[in-house]
Length: 256
Image 1 (cartoon, rainbow, N blue to C red):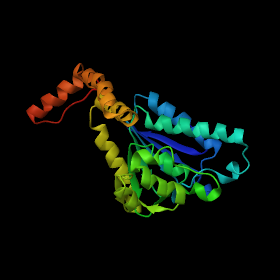
Image 2 (cartoon, rainbow, N blue to C red):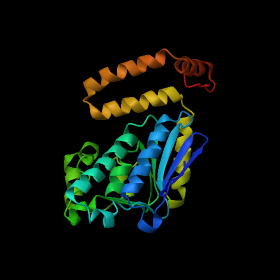
Image 3 (cartoon, rainbow, N blue to C red):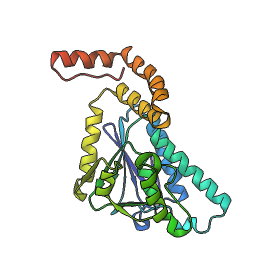
Image 4 (tube, helix red, strand yellow):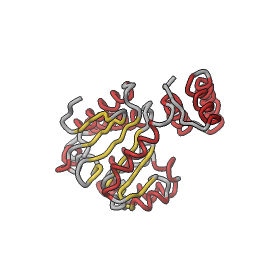
């Protein structure tokens, strides 16, 4: 797959997606959104992909929306842009493959919300996060932050628009790992390898269960997740995993 604003490669089942507009701080213009939608649709359907890693080229993960493009939009233009952005975030959240966010630098505005659609987040200790749109006469982050950090922390982030560090993100439960800048990519790659060592079918069902758990209250989510677990018990990998445990050996999963 070839793109103007993305770099893509499938490295032995790890799909690397790099937003490649470093001169524009990897800002999300309309074309970049369309390309990201296309690549994550392809990842979802590609059986050779086991896990995806999303990162940015250069020193910034995503600097936000492309303000040059945003500043001349009409209300209808923004509805179109915003719909594309929502489609992208939903594609990442509901993707059949786990998505690791490798935050190599600042994740601002739409970039902050984009990385929060990922399943696992590794951040450089130099990275800053913010939803600063309130300072531009608009707002951002209000649809996702309350569910993740709670109403009051979300209100502080959205209404003040101030930046917070990767370490603060870790304390708030947004970031999984904070590492040195030069270790972001290698740490994300190691996490991907760990996921690929699991049963592909179990990982896929677990990802679906996590999506359900995030969308529904616990009782309803448990009812909806039960058939997913039942499906695993009808396949090879569940039996292989448990047999390998009893035999004290590494399991040989087939994805069935």
